[in-house]
Length: 592
Image (tube, rainbow, N blue to C red; front, side, top):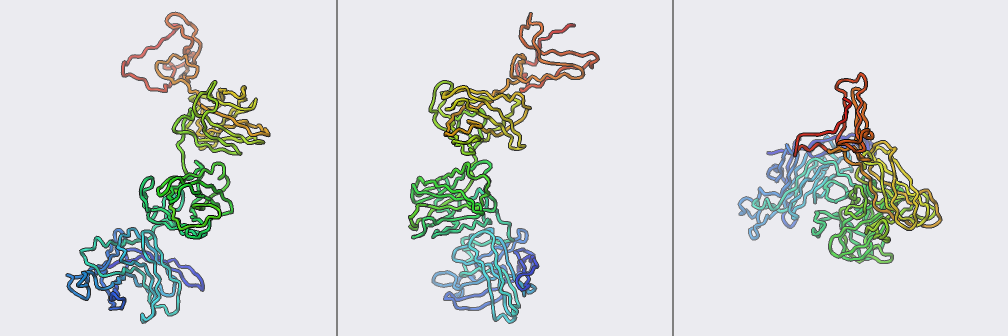
């Protein structure tokens, strides 16, 4: 007889009244028993008997550490025995309860937890599968049984706490209950595969509801009945398997909703926008999203649905509202209309996530597909709008409008950008239009990895017209930055709300050092370096005559005592292209 085993993990401790607590888990390494209880189809008991594990039918895979539970097939035979087979329908004629279990009486007198993991659940709905703990008295005349009904994949746990002095026998294992079956239907009737428990996935954004081990624990309140279920409409933008159903039952409170706790707080460092896929039988109804921090702090916003009976993505923008709070609970209210009770409508939602926007690179023209994600602070409000003043120095179609509230000195906007390397250019230009004279504009560049930053402030000369201003970081050391912050009306606490417009933030890049090299560029970093006693520098041409009348050349002085191999090195930004020729020419001037 094939045997299945369980590993017993004993965690001794003391609970109420000093009773020990033990935990056992599925494992293919210890003695396994089989037993069958057989019932007539009217429910009356026929008989019970020990049963071979392979005949129940239970399949053990020690290598995979798994147990496969199936309906019973071995009693069907050739289908001619009327006790086991209904001769009219051809179906099994008995309800067969197959028990696969470990018996371990060293556990008597202790509380017990039996745990495992269901990795596959394909068994026919005509069969019931239970994980159980059974405790008998000495003569088996009295039974206490705790069950966990297995209906899907994921971890399971059964607990026994009713410890009594009469306890004498402890068994734990599985039952498969249903008609004995025709073995030709084995594949169609499916199975349940169980093994040792696995660590549950954390419930953290993004939440897809697809994990078999995560404890989503969606809880309804105010008359709302939620559940994690199979996606009823796997079309359009959401073909995933699993979603949350949220039914607003008839008469439910208008504020009824569904809440879900998170194992990790929401990370808003990259974005403060949350998106959720929703399915609603009604269009243009408000869906309220509330985020709570567990300490009384919360933020909430309403967004309306736009379609009926199809999936759509709704977004809630909490920009400027999340600082200083760690949100660990998500609450969703459908049709949040004061005074309007529930009518039994079912709504669905899925894929809760922080929207991380693509990071643009300079120049920022606001005309591209990838625009900045603005993170305003201190009351600043920045939006991309159609250019209301397409004139003068800026006739572009789109600009940024920045509203600075009254009595605010340091309202600004930040946004992430692709790496800015100021060794490639240390001046930046910006088109700006202000409504007040002498407005101060501050540009700050930040490195979010090491925390360094540089900034420059410019006072505009014009009012109510576009002006191109330049920020010069020429005295700063070479470094890289990945975040831009702009302050309009910096350090100015006017008593009125102020509007400013900006556009076309760009870095003035140095010319590349590549062949041909003329040494005439004002921005290229030639970086000629002398070595072994040679001194080299880019200087004015001391002899602008003959074949070289250019303004700028390299002077190399081979100082007294320098090595015979002293020379000058210069790094190129672009490799030399020898595809057309492998000869190089250089104009030289020598006293010898």
